[in-house]
Length: 461
Ligand code: ARG
Image (cartoon, rainbow, N blue to C red):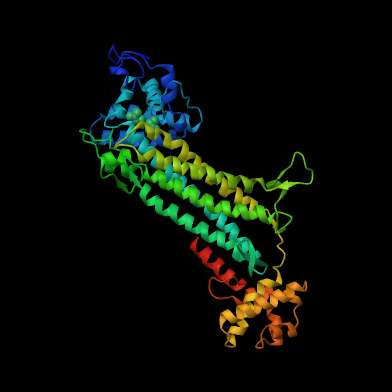
């Protein structure tokens, strides 16, 4: 690993071997190197280019050297683009790999690029560039899913299903209403990502190892050229903080929790007992043992993977919690958790979009008993106190139940026996579709409300 431009005593990695008398133990090396950060290569190059241009513009590096380094960076960039960049076992991390490759291309002067820069502000920058792109992609994925839900709700607006509480049939609503309940949750998730994007939008480049630099750098120049709205206010904070990584993991975990609830409903709905949905063959798996089976595995795995993304959030919070400021190597561990959280959410949003778009929906009507509240409300309109009306309908249901009759089999005489203020016409209230249509107040479960919600949703997208 010796190079002509380093002190003869130096050994080990070119980046920091100068004060070392012995090379790293292979065990130690293997334990400490990071290979998970390789996907940050393009961001590392982008940051390096911005840093170089700033150094040249400020006269810290000469134009001629600057041009050569830039050429080298461009070449590495082309290699990265072509998937031809080769990482070596001796690369400690992505930053070391770029510097090593640059050294191979332009010689020892490649080291000048690290002027007034540290891997501490470099990784903080790379992560922000990565997060900025990923947040945009996640938002796009969530929007695509919301669109599918809105389209489905449109088709299913007149289909009536029971709304559940305690997983017991509660009130008849439009099936579109149930679907849109998930869409509104996703819209809030999207809002959290968009809000987080504002906090990501701050460049840490120029914080150096943590204390800033005596070299006349200008962090605002690099921030601007990298498209950041602001630069750091405090160099220690800039390299020490991972709160936005935690926040991104939280946003991912929260979205996964919402998708997990949708997954749970799809699993239930696809059962023979519910019979609400038939997933397409392309979005289902079979059983190796039971020939008749068609399993909703994508939904089940989404539900399962929500657990691991919650784990990612826990990892990130716990990783940061005991660390003294500023940088500590523990922070290297943030990437695996963050990448996993982001990848899992993106894949899950994508699978749901496809799964819902290709599914067939055919939910059966709710039980007639879901109109019970409509009967009670008829009495309320005639001046009967709610508790009394509730009791009367309860009595009616209990009597019918004892005789093995359902509510739609009730006769005018049954109503009258339950409460004198019932009218024979009240029997017409026992109709789930009419019940749902009556609840046309804004945000209610009627088909009319669903149409309004779809318009509002599409407006917000
Ligand atoms: N690979 C490191 C990380 O991900 C980069 C920063 C290393 N800094 C250092 N002083 N060793 O955190």
